[in-house]
Structure formats: structure tokens, C-alpha cells
Amino acid sequence: MKSIDCKEIGMDVRLMVQGTPNPNAFKFVLNVPVKSEGNVTYKTPEECMDNPLAKAVFEISGHIREVYFFDNYVTVTQDGLEDWEALEEKIKIAILAKINNHDPNFKIAVPKKDDYSQILRTPEMDRIDAILNDTVRPALQMDGGDLQLVSYKDNVLTVFYQGACGSCPSASMGTLMAIENLLRNEFNPEIVVQLKEGSY
Image: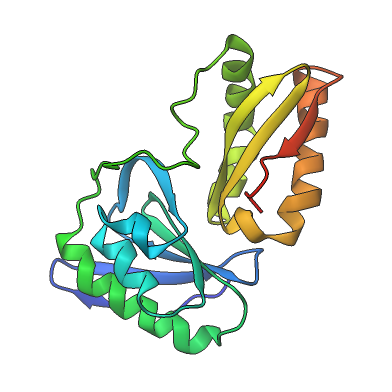
């Protein structure tokens, strides 16, 4: 874990930077919420019209590929072509400049195409989600990411990675296999877990 001394501004906002298992993603953790309910992933500046803080982060560099909001942190993922030390400082300045006016209760004006939180749920998917909530999801969130269930049909579960998990090499194989093994033990011995195309 990589930590940087906290900074204080206005209403005593503190910011700490943490590394993640993904070498191209860092968590920017605050002592105030950035998303009160649920989470959201932005992949382009054009998706950030309802979130000036996310837009400000994207404007720092053309190498930023994703900005993820959850609870009290923002996970920023880059393409690996820019030096993190210089990028971190710029991201910290952008977040601290916008956080006082940021509303953690913000709503998404236009549903994002990769937001699967509103899909039609089945009892099987609810059970899978409950298992993941008790096991895998806390660890993913600790590492600056998460996953959403996309569909479950004919014993095939499709998931979508968010935040640091989205481009993490270990998430694409190791974590996916761990989730599959877990669900085979606790839910269905024939289940197959796959990534939604475009989520990695």
C-alpha cells in the first residue's frame, strides 16, 4: 500500500492515496463521501456531465482511462504510459479543488450503458449477489474496485468489473476463477463465470 501525507482544505477534508493490485490504478481515499449510494464508473470525459469532479480528473491527462466513485474514494485508472508520481499530485489537487462543491448524492442523468445495477433481477442472481457480498465483494472494494452481475442463464454467470478491477491482470483470470470456485461450492456446482465483453 502506498500512502501519501494527508492534506487539509476548507472543511477539514483529508485525502490519502493508496496503491491497488492493479499497477495502473490508484485509490484516492477521503474522509468524506464521494458517492452516498451505489457506485459509478466513467470511461470518458463525455460521461461526466453530471459530475464536475470526475470531469476535472479526466481533464488532467489523456492517459486516464477510467474514474470510479464508491463510498469515500475515487479510483483512477490510467493506460500505464504516464508517470504516476506526477499524475498523483495533479489528481489530488483536482479532487481537493472540487470536493467542497461535490454532492455525494448525485444522480446519473442518463443511464450509462455499462450500469447493470438496474437490470431485471432473478432470485438466483439475488442469491449470487448475497454470496458475493459476504465473500468476494469486500476484498474487491478494498482494492478500489467491484463487480456487477450482468446476467445468469443456463448456468453461465456474466459479470462486469469496475474500478481497479477493470484492467487488472489478476482480476481477469485469478479472481474470476476464485469467484467461480466459490459459487460452485456455495451455489451451483455447474456454474461458469465469464466477463462481460468490453469490461476488461
